[in-house]
Image (tube, rainbow, N blue to C red; front, top):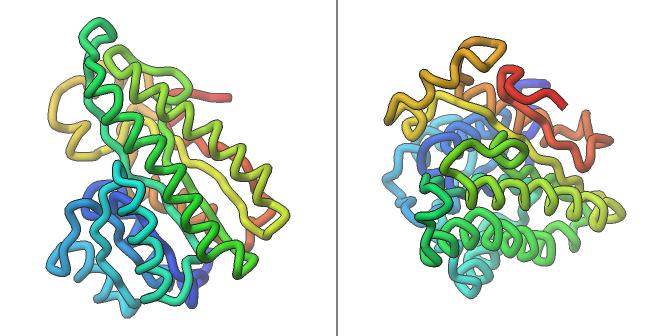
Length: 249
């Protein structure tokens, strides 16, 4: 992929104030895309704003609560009005509370599903309706997880939501392809995120990963950027595993 291949494109990345989302936003900016950071906690002073802006692209912070459908509708409208359009949508926002099946509460269940699945769906719907359909162009990349294919213990609801992301990705791909809109997903395995490194569970899984290491955030971000490229526009409905060989299918 050429260094500035996304120049002239506008990308909206959800959950990009930090973590994988931040790395994705910075990677797309390096490749020339203007960036919209949609996050419940983003501010004009957030590090991701200054880091993307330093790369010479336009950057817009956009506060949005993905559990509020009216908020989503208004935020996407504001983004299109300000930036002109949205060519690329990266649905990265997600929550990962771990809890055994018998201890999951309805509040926890709704929290995970509303952000990881419902919010993703309605952000996509709004972006497609307000920008991608009118412009007959779109690249959608959803962030799923290896847990969406083979959930570990304690993440039943998260795994179910991420399996839903895989299914939605295929539905988006099938229904929107006639409008020059592609939808794919990246399914990361164990990566060097703050959340993963916060406890020692990753040490127990390391021996099961053929590559014998955690993934780098940049490796996830580069996989996402690859799927945004017009050079691979015939890829549609693909679930790209980036997990060091933990799951091979």
